[in-house]
Image (cartoon, rainbow, N blue to C red):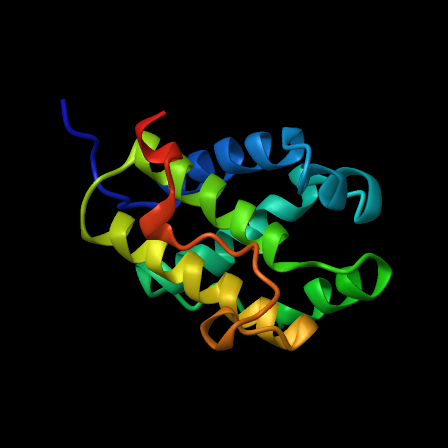
Length: 146
């Protein structure tokens, strides 16, 4: 049975809760959320949902600088291509487990674009020009079938 497409803020909240459950538990990127940033998901989730609602559902809910917290985190503990690659893997796998359709496709593509932009801005690394490696493009993600 096919999964429905992303259609509402509630869909995004569920998607983000599932994604962050996986991200917090991940041995590579989890410590950035749990130990370094000490992220309180319940207080942060409305802002993250605002961001994705603006990006995917074209609302005007998000009016913050999405890069600033990542830059601050990178200053405390550098974020590498491997970290962003793992983020993309988990993001894509979470979307694939819940949704199919044009907005789900856009969410996957937007996630990869955001990860690449964050990597470039935090470290100056650009996988397209032969960075240090570690970034996993969506085409190589094996978790979709998991």
